[in-house]
Image (tube, rainbow, N blue to C red; front, side, top):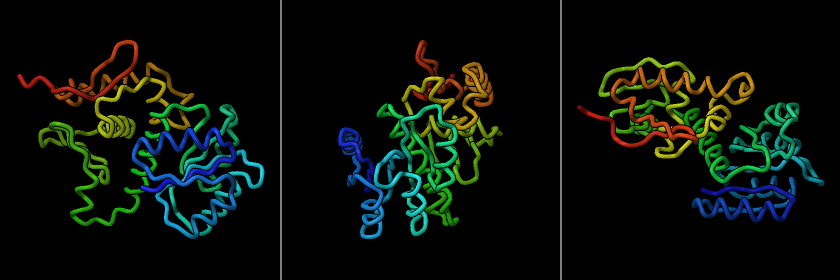
Length: 235
């Protein structure tokens, strides 16, 4: 998968390239919006990481120009955590999501994967092969991303939207430990500040109850958060 990194800071160029290459991505890095637009017109990329604060052409302008001819997934980077208007402006300019600097390697990769999953689901045309690609299986759990449904040992289980989103995130990253803050950020998104750690705990408790014995797959890692792993007790 080819990723275009757009940032006028050399240190960030190096950091992003290192993270992405280690994760198996092919990286092309440019330092301004004009070069980004030129690169996207000349070559095919699967993803764009676009910094907001650039001197020659800011990320908002670059994003709008890219959206005029391309639907490539775009993740915007900002150094201002509290600037709500930057987030809104970025999304309105055509970005799929945004990430605040500094960020962790795991958060960057998880956000990219989430954006690509959403993009992939929006392109589903309904063929049998595509339906298979839109299913995630973990032991007895089978999650259908297109229909937003869950089956446990063949039995359909009703989930709320947030319960589905939590399970999708965890089934996509089995054995990863997600802190409550990470779950709030990635599942609740723009409503992050309206939810609390207790909100996460309540949803986890309800999910376990709905999954029955298979709820044991959702494990609490004390002092760190939650993960999906291990085998549920079949007895």
